[in-house]
Length: 128
Image (cartoon, rainbow, N blue to C red):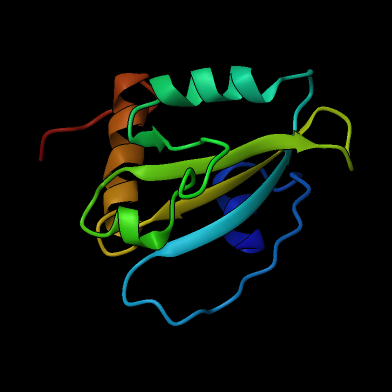
């Protein structure tokens, strides 16, 4: 997780991660702590994430108000829940993320990253 994040985003990014294997048929779940350059509130993050393609926000302060791998089964979206301030760092947020790793895994991510690079004109497709 640490190596892949550095490879994809930035080799200088500081990241701490703990991976745990649990017995589920399908799905990845991650507790993510993020430190931003500027302050951001949980409400601002929810609003931004609700507008992001491929993200579904399920974040209610009630029983069943967060996503589990069960909600993600068979879905292409990544589900984000439990968006909270992380008081251990300046400008930090903690989030809970789940997805169907068979649907939203390496292959689909690769295609979507390439589509974004093409859209932003960061790569060029040449005819064979």
